[in-house]
Image (cartoon, rainbow, N blue to C red; front, side):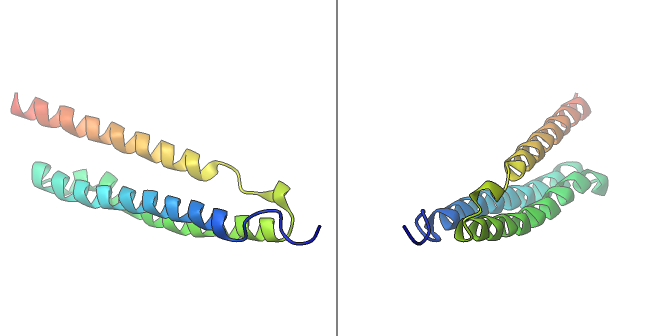
Length: 115
């Protein structure tokens, strides 16, 4: 039996596209958060976590492309045992948790300021 044992390019490409959509929505949410935080607080120091999220979205975009390249190379070279791990998923989960925690802190701060 010759040739690859998978649908050439399609499965890794679909996965990359799904990750790109996730990263894009993460970046857009960070941009919207930047605007809302700057309007709500006025203090530039509150924008630092949101700026971090914007930079993190860009870094995730690069990581997604690297993961696609590594996955495709592993599958084409019949090195399926070298497939990338779930570090990208863990990174997105941790970043989402930290952003949600920051949002909760911002809401509590706003409520305490208005009380």
